[in-house]
Amino acid sequence: MPEQLWLPGLEAPPPLTDGLFFAVYPDSNTAAGIAKFAQQLCADHDLRGGGRRGVRSKPLAANRLHVTLRHLGNFSGGLPADVLEAAKRAAASVSMAPFTVEFDALASFAKKPRPGPAVLVGEHGVRGLQALHDALEARLRDDGIEPDERFTPHLTLAYGMPWIERRPAEPACWNVREFALVHSLLGRTRHIVLARWPLVGQN
Image (tube, rainbow, N blue to C red; front, side):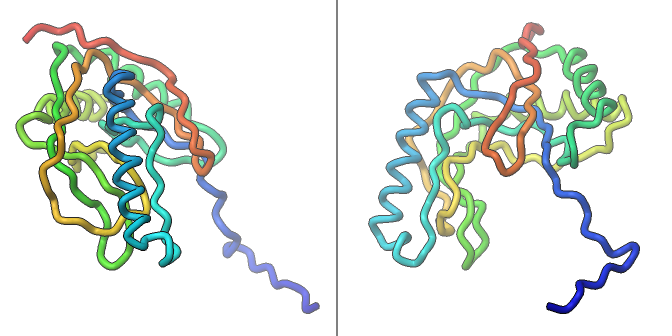
């Protein structure tokens, strides 16, 4: 077997192991209803032949359903202490009243012809999420975190789904009374909530 060559400066970068993001979670009853809808959506897809093409859909379990408010990055070998502390300072300075969120449409983040995520989206019912994102974004910018204003409020239902045209869905609605900072163990399908902040501001 020939000896493998090693060239300085060309070694592979270390794998990304840890992610950090802010999130909003539905209450347990709402999450259970959304998870049931996601399971049915995937079952319908697989019955239509998705599995025979080698693409099995993967619905998210109820305890993993969430709305990502702001992704703060993926890292190797743990979470950087400076980013973690900046995130906590920003979150603690947000003042906002609780609000109601409503997702009322099914859409796709897939890119033809490749399968991708099926998601719930909304319009008027997601304005509170947009406001919370913007408040966090402003505080993070003040603390030196590079701005990222790209935000489409959505809740991922399943992966491995074909592209679909946006269409109405039975509304998923709940009261948002807090948001969380979440540590994602990449590749291990595990999320750890590091801290939560209640929404206690005035309208």
